[in-house]
Image (cartoon, rainbow, N blue to C red; front, side, top):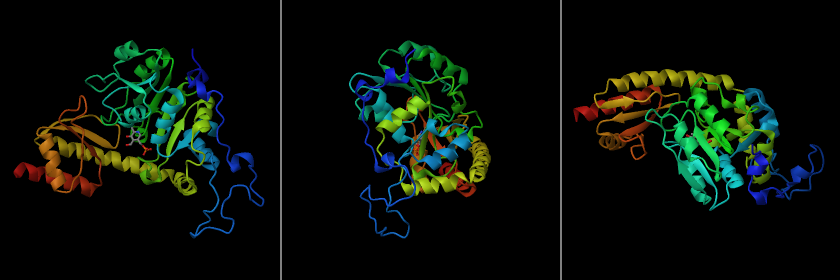
Length: 350
Ligand SMILES: Cc1ncc(COP(=O)(O)O)c(C=O)c1O
């Protein structure tokens, strides 16, 4: 079985990262004249003149407690889009290696691969949006270095069957990345619990969804110590600002608020789903373990544009494979959901 280091692009095996002043001296007290900061202070009220902790230690300790994992197994990125890009850059040789994606799924895996001139193998989900394991296994080859699986999946909303992911983990020589951006809404166990069994499993989560902190840009990667070392090796030195680290630390202390959001959003989702079911042009509402619903409408393009004219913006997903006639609807507040339903009913009358 290949190890993480065997999969790494060869030029990174003896790569020397940038060493920050804070990497070289880790003490907390002293006269710090080593980082060319502004010693007099900051033009802003807060003391932002010092560079932030490049390893986000405090934040990782708190996250480690919440997620039940040691801090060394956590990498923090500028949103989860940063670790997606870094994973591709670390493990895929441009023009030679490939990633595998399972459409319809989150768009950034392909965009990051394209940006890095890395090939993309696409194996469609089944009609019920599950992994097509025989086709995935048949399409694997030595050049595929990473499989991205989103669970719950964006835009379809469903969790992937655990047993299918186990088969892939057991068959595949490369990295299996499970993007759990929406896991909090699902009540399912995170794949973080399986990291000790699978050294090439990588789990992504984010503060952008259930925690309500999309503007902070804080994504998390959980993996083996070896994997996280690779990520630290190639990341930009100060990728998470001091402001974000402080705000995220304060937010993590309010986990019960996050749990309340999840509970409320799930109740609102059920009620939105009931309302949409009674709408005459609804063809299908797909089961969702996330904070959105994928809905197939008759005349979906017309409905989508009508809603825009009423200042209600959905995400048109009808161009995606297996999603013809579908829009993705984020669960709104009670009032927003009512406005949506009122506009849909007006469309019918008009
Ligand atoms: C499945 C999935 N992964 C990752 C992201 C990006 O999250 P972040 O805001 O942490 O970059 C999104 C955003 O919509 C998403 O749907």
